[in-house]
Length: 204
Image 1 (cartoon, one colour):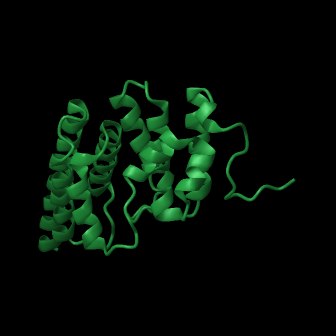
Image 2: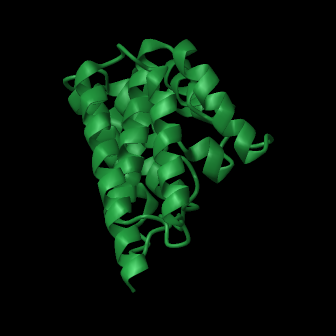
């Protein structure tokens, strides 16, 4: 029998699965849903690379002790980007994981500027676990700006993104000092890379 590539991996409810099984099932779900999505950089990397990086950062930050949070890191963009519903995530992975995903999901019905404003406003009010996930996501995004930024972003737009990310992370203070330090390093490296690219652009 052929299964639709967008269908959810079938098995017992993931909320009751062993930790490793939960994470692998989340990876399978995310990989299927984000199959055709690419990052906006020159290399057009598969979007799942970003999800894996965020999950790794979360795993390291928590010492691998929170499988549901690592799984949520893999799924954190499926609602925003792939029209997956909160109800589907809850039915497949349980209420705890669905709640984590929805805490870090923007309302796509709002204008982009308002979504960004809301992220800054809501950051201090996230749960402790969702703050770790948000930190990991912002760190991975800044690393992307350093290594392979969106092709159509000017230096000014990239700098503005870094400063906005810093504003979001200010509201996450205390969630995970080690990850906050990693974020700050990523922000410094992103600014340095932006300045280098801007200088080359002017020279050319």
